[in-house]
Length: 107
Image (cartoon, rainbow, N blue to C red; front, side):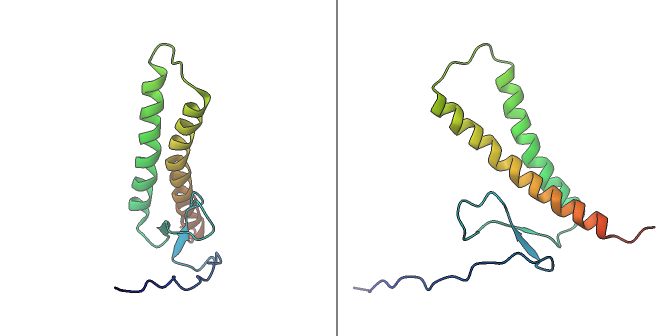
């Protein structure tokens, strides 16, 4: 039977402006696993942010069109987190787009 060995300790990633991959702020612990490719084309980055923000917008619009919604507070808390995660991802990607646009030379 194969003996399992623990993973080696990881080195904490220190954000640096020249890093190609930026950790999403929505990572659930101090060892990020989800990243944004800061060198991706601007139209792809914009589409990515747009998709996440519109998905949450659609869910919230559908909820607002219903009558009264009664549920426990922990359900509302879970729902808020469900909406916050893709919104935060979209905002992170828009931050990358903004930085890239500001870094462009004036035309």
